Length: 337
Image (cartoon, helix red, strand yellow):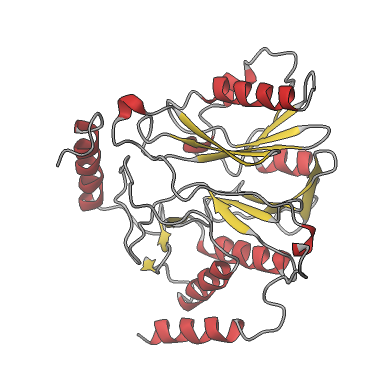
């Protein structure tokens, strides 16, 4: 209880500090290019026979969000395709059995047709190196399409430093210019050593990978994770943040309740987009741990030290297997009990 009260006091105090949020004058909205997000996403059913491998959503004419179907893999990650005037950026390549390359090729060709373009170079980069975000790498590297020449960026610290111009990792900020569209890049190790967050100046979206999203925030290095979250807070101070978009949705619309690991069909998902305020809540929770890893549930996410910090139990592994079996047994008709 003492730790909870301390965290709450710190959080309330932070919200009293001037310039916590970037402000935008009206009616121009800070010159941010707007877009739309769907009210709900298709996750993995109710009938997998009817589900495409990828749901494609047009945020605006130059930003496309793709989500992998839970019918192909329970992770259901998001990937992002951003277009500038000179080049495009693909952020992550999906999980196992995702078959992303054909969908990316189709989406890029539709954008080219829409814009009367013959081709555009594509940078393929990653928010981090975990398997559910790099599974499509080989197929995209093998894509032989002269209208989409690909620059592949391995999910490593060294490759990120080189392509984004990050001199001192993780302290310096890098960037990539897609042509009239600058994306700022921050190193945010803690979930993964090569993790990055990206801020799109055009839409004011902060892409946070697996470090911030509505669900279980798996922490591999507690100290690094805390410093990385503070780095995102410092970077966004005074800036407009329209949305924080992470790579998953694991939380339900019921406060404090998440879907069990292994769930493929999530008909009552939490709203995907988060606000900058969640970074303050995360920071307060991390500081309240005082360096001792604890799994703590909040309304919209959970802090979940994992790996060498907290050993998985036989009970948790059994729960995953049970969830997967129940879901896969009914993947063709999830309305069954």
